[in-house]
Image (cartoon, rainbow, N blue to C red; front, side, top):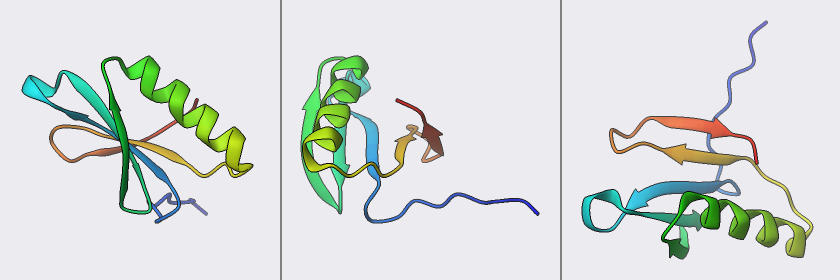
Length: 73
């Protein structure tokens, strides 16, 4: 049986933002947490945020076309 992943409200969302998608924004629970100049900076922020909260939900990247991809940090 296949297991389908869906975005939940606890999950982190990373997506391009800013002029020409030159930055990466991070949100969780529908709350904007920040934007970063580099994708690596956004991922580092998410790892630190998870560690400080002791909670490790899924992390998704949303493309500029709206496609969701589950990522591993």
